[in-house]
Length: 473
Image (cartoon, rainbow, N blue to C red; front, side):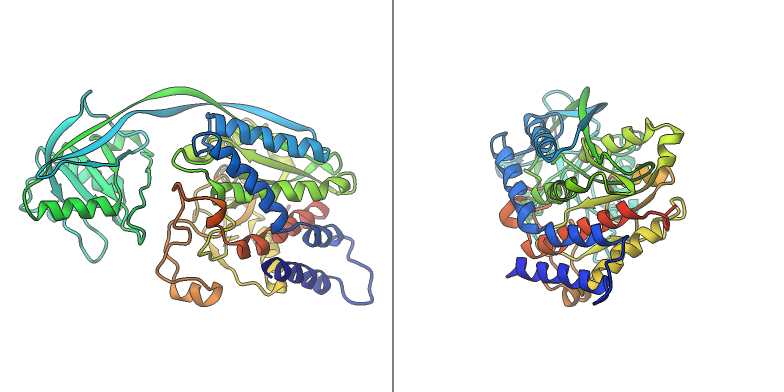
């Protein structure tokens, strides 16, 4: 039924864009054809393949792992079979490698605590450190541990401090704890799914001076219960090192179309090491693969060249896309009229977020957004806009380069609002994707409704710009 509704929506938009009794608009025939022939059901076959790849490779497809290499082979095979020449760009980068990450409550109970070291955190001595565990007071306004005054009367000096992630940011929380003499920071994200644990990144290493890691809300609650009986002694070992690594970006572009006016559409191919990455972000990769397959017979009929990009190491903070944009010449940058980026297009409790076109540093973005809005409005599907930084992803280096951007996601770790529940259905107060960066990010977790609605939309926008980018330039 969901697939049928998506097909009806695709036909409806085609009908609305080509008036009855009149010849098709020359700029929209390809977009309409791609919307009719590219479906969530087709994309689902690719998603099952990516899930098998993860299952065969330790449950993940993270960059610089066999699972990522197998994913890259799959993409290459699919595109080559469709008639594209696939190009691979080797991307050297430096990655933080985790040597030890463990936590144990020693007293009053013996309890192992699953601990994820922050990527780039300072390290403990080899063998770890043992110290009292102190709890940051939980404040209703979401600012726990944001000021030194929050810890008045607490023995932070020489302790490991456990705090919920707060609105001031975990970098600032760490600075406060370090300034009071704390030896390490443990953090949990207060999300509705208490078993969830998220690895965080240290974006500015000079701001961090003490070892830092995350645990789950569930285990934070267990520790709090134990602390009510007796002071807790905790052992923590966090060690890692920086290593030179390589990943790859993959590209496939149409044979035809102006090389001076390039339409790019991309998605990252890697998962996090903690899960198979099916919504994040195989869902978007699958949509682009199927769009490329359906576009292939028309490669020589497009006016503007279409370049599909599959990025490596996005989960290491946009490594692949950063490298690509940084190594473009001025002329190569000028030839790219726009870049569309896609993330998590099948979140189970989804809201449809379009990148807000108000991006002064990247003129033309407003037009890209309007094209997405045009599709969803005429298909009768709701949407919202979010800032270009709403989901940190591979659009960022294109914005920095002044290239127009657009795209969408269906939500990640945030909580759906009552307004969004009324618009899109689903549950208010719950995460858009409770399996984001978790082991359960699998096919069974996806919203097939979102997949069915979004895959034709992605195909339509790519087909539309393949025939006309004059309003973006």
